[in-house]
Image (cartoon, rainbow, N blue to C red):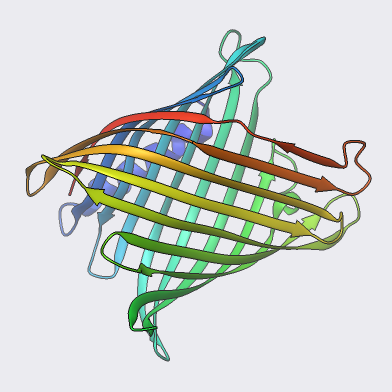
Length: 301
C-alpha cells in the first residue's frame, strides 16, 4: 500500500479515535466480497474492507469506502489496486425549500502488476460538493429530487493538479413507482480542463436505473436491474452508451436489529456497449460482454 493511502487511513483512524471520547457513533458499516466474471476472460474481484459512515455530531458524519481490487485478464499479468474514498458530510440547514449537505471528499485510486509491482498508476481527487434535496410529488407518487454542485482538483500519476480539475452540475430524481418498481434518474454535465488544448471541454450525460424487486420466501428475493448510461462530448464528437438487463437472486438475513448479512448472484441477460468517436479508425464500435456476478457480505448499523 502506498504511503499516501497509509497516511490517509491513519489520519482517519486518529480522527475517529479522538472524537469517541465526546461524541460519535457508527452510522453503518458494510464489508463485502464481489466477483465479476466476464465472457471474454476478464475477472474482477473487489473486496470492500469497509464502506459506511461514522456520526461525529448531529450535523457531521465521517464517510469511508476502502476497496481492494484483483483483476485477471487472459494473456495479461494480474493487476491489483485500491479504490478509496474518505470525507465529511456536514448538514448546513435549508436553502429555500431544499435541505443542504456539504460534502468534503478525498479519493485515491491506484493499481499495479501483482507479480512485480510495475506498471503502477494512481489518481487523487479533492472534492467539494454541496447537495440540495427536497421531497416532491409527481403523478401522485413521492420522489426525492436533488441538485449536486461539484468542484474538484486532482492529478493523474503525480502530474499537475489542473489535469483533471473542473466542475459538475448533477440532477437526481428517485422514488418508488409501485410496490415492486423503483426509478433512479441522473442528469449531469462536466467542465474539465483539457491539457492538450488548454481549454475547458463540455460533456453531457445521463445515468438511469429502473429496478424490480419481488420478495420470495425466507429472506430470498428476485430482482431485475435495467440500466442505461450515455454521454456526449461535443469537442471530440464522441458518444458512448451502455445498457444492461441484469436479473438477480438475493438473500438477506437479519440476525438482530444491528447486524445482517447478505449474498446474491446475477447475470447480465442483455449487455450492450456503443462508442462513436469522430476521427477514430473504428468509428463505430458495438459489442456485448455479459457479466456473471456473485457477492457475499455483512452490514452493521
